[in-house]
Image (tube, rainbow, N blue to C red):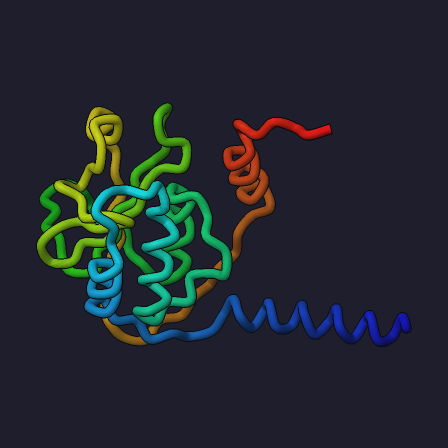
Length: 175
């Protein structure tokens, strides 16, 4: 029984290690098309879920779990995305914006530029989906070219702890 458990454990570890270093083919147009076609009339507070699903459809195996939107500012560079300076910025199809969390939005925000507008779980009127984000003014833009890329994902356990803490902040402990 112990040998079988050891084999299963080692197999799982190998699969995880391989999974975190696989190449992938990314297509910005597919991402922009998918997120635009699936956008809701107004926000459902699920921006990260919609953008991650669009990225999967574009070829990027971003991860099996949807994280808070602000967390993607650390993950996208590990997937091969480059951060684009805001000064002199000109949007391109497939660009991804990550906005930090604030007092009104503890998970932050993430959206994709489709060539005309920014789209997340809804079609936005501007880069900033609300006045709270606009007042802050902070934003990170990430870009990747179409083609083959390598992912090198390593998420610190401290990051997972922080995300879990934010996600459960308002939960009441049930007895």
